[in-house]
Image (tube, rainbow, N blue to C red; front, side, top):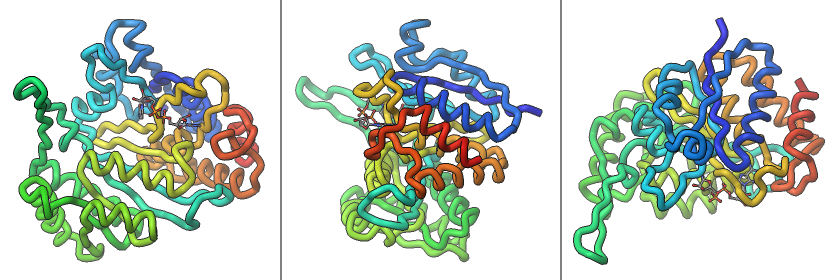
Length: 332
Ligand code: NAI
């Protein structure tokens, strides 16, 4: 039976990179039933809401969703589409691997680590208020159940992938209650995984260690805001946003998207690097249990970069989005 995949083209370079990823995924020969849905500015323009209820329902009922980046219209009173999707569908785990790409110039070779970010609470809970004019508060919510499920997800991911160590990244020395709870919960979960080592690192020290020696880490787990920042840092360690994929995982629902945004500066010109979204589609195929197809795509991309056959402008090349996809498909 065909997999039911919701495709959200999104805004800016979204339609270009989603079309590219769809082409590559289709080339595997696996049967997909694509359900195109709107979100972001495109949805606001068409139906007056950035995340229409029909889109939310379709994502909930699909086997998986492949999503292009969406712009959140600012000053309109609407919440971020991504934050809304993650909270409403309880996509609690944001999984962001950072792996060096052969042939892509970057500061380090052989970086291979995973950032697991708690995706539903922390400073992204959306609880902000003005105390008095000129003073606002944003609440940073940390709960034991959410900390437990993200820690468990990090250890399960480590085990599935034959990884050796999970590091809890936190600021428990200062945020004694909130990050204290997060760290204590990670420690407790670690006791159930005797085969995986566990340690912890304060966020500022972790940032320095990542830049000095990314090999100090294997799987890193952290709350929402730290994960947002650290995963862009790790994307930078392996060649930039054009290469960084991600998965948002809940119970029976999952959304796969690139780490990058809508790139308005290059949108509509066929210049976007589709690799990050294609690699997100690879994560989707693994999630669906289609390991062979995922390996084929990943190997084809790595061959294109290793041989230097095609490269988009962000990586110093001249290829258009479509030409890059042609090069990947030629390696199938
Ligand atoms: P951005 O990631 O869109 O762009 C940053 C820089 O990276 C730009 O110079 C852009 O051209 C370049 N870039 C990004 N992706 C690229 C690709 N695939 N190929 C080649 N170059 C690429 O970040 P920015 O400018 O901060 O955000 C723009 C918009 O995107 C904002 O409205 C933001 O809210 C939204 N956004 C959406 C996300 C999502 O839907 N998942 C994630 C991040 C931002």
